[in-house]
Image (cartoon, rainbow, N blue to C red; front, side, top):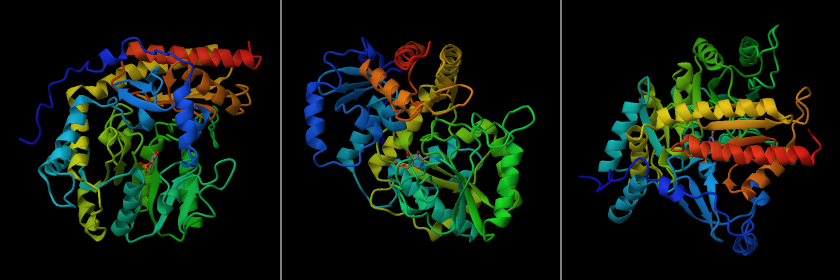
Length: 464
Ligand SMILES: Cc1ncc(COP(=O)(O)O)c(C=O)c1O
């Protein structure tokens, strides 16, 4: 027996704490939040724009709700930051972590009973013999491991990523990401040698189009092939890509992109590394977002939802390349500790037991229908995008020019937060990442709040 009493919760465990939300009893951010944030930021620097635009202090989370230090209760449309996807403090996951917190917190990279179970479970759920696994404790470390793994597998050293992808903040990971963030070269002065970027296919803002005006995937692939031959030294180990761009605004490529890219990779003996840290583990209704397009990557990384809030991440390669991982030893101080394995194992079990993938598909369609309706009715909504619970609403000044409407994005974010919606956006694309347990009732509540905020902002800017 590895853990106790883990199955004694109902699938509806989160509904009791959700009753009556949003429940705001002070202005928000409230007086205690303001004081606490001011004293924290005397020392703590470099916070995200989300926090700067709405400096609330949270002290409790349960299911789809967050409560701040003033007692205000919010509907959560962010899952932390794509992290607590099965709800804050899911009883099974919290209990699994606390069981090992009391029994064995760290045993280096020795095998433990819970690690054995996690390995078996991961091998069972992942497609196509993706079953050579290493565990880490943040997404960036898993990405760095993937870069090392690609080099070990191919004996090549160059990497190609896409404009506006994001993979983390260490040197290798940041070299696969956009470095210039609009105001400053925040990750410069340059990317590491041998790391290149190519245009990402964004169907709303295509660089190359077919005669009918829709995005021309073949033109992207053709450019990539030319770039391989002309722009590199012929030593490309892998394409490093998010399956859907999360940070950039829930931007999904056209349906035929990954199948065609995989063909190109195979032709040139290049690995396809699929960074599913943000989009994987059920967020789009599949274990891997690439599953939607029938593509099996050579390398994949998981994070964020993987431990539902506990820091645990994974880097996985195909069985036939598993031996190469011996060259990049997996041991780290915290990677794969018993609490981490317990969190990941319990999270996967919850996805299975609570039929979460099906909920994401069903409620995801509901979200998309609602967003499409909103797009028809609002002059500043240029595009809506997403799959499952990875969603975006793109705000523009004019539907014809598609000029990004950053000022509106900021205001909508603040106004919706003030109405009790804890969420992510900060730029012109409103990003939504609700907990995957959410049903249509609360999905509607969140979208109503967002739509009211958009309508108010439109009025303020003189639309309609
Ligand atoms: C696609 C992707 N990869 C890697 C990372 C880095 O993960 P972490 O913040 O856990 O280091 C992120 C974080 O947002 C991400 O979105």
